[in-house]
Length: 95
Image (tube, rainbow, N blue to C red):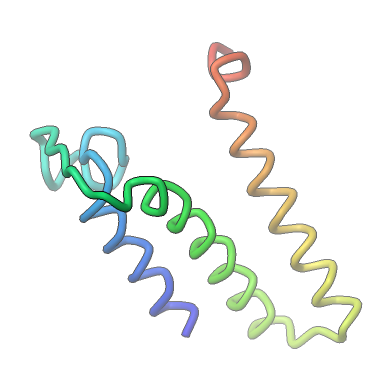
C-alpha cells in the first residue's frame, strides 16, 4: 500500500506540477510544462501528505512497533516533514 501511495504521489507530481520545479522530473522533461488544473490547490498539498503517510506506513511495517512506538514514528516523520518545509521558506533557503 505504501509503495502504491508513493507511486500515486509521483503521478500527481507528473500531472500537476511544473516539471522544472520537481528535481526528479527536470531531467526527464527538460521543458517547463505548465498544467492548468482547477484542483491546483489540492495538487500542491496532496503529494506532501501522501509522501509522509507512505513513509509512516513503511516505517511501521519494518519496525512492527507498539502503540507508543507508532505514535513516536508519526511524530518523528511529522518533525522531519516540518523541518524540510521550513527549510524551503525564503528566509532559511538563502543559507
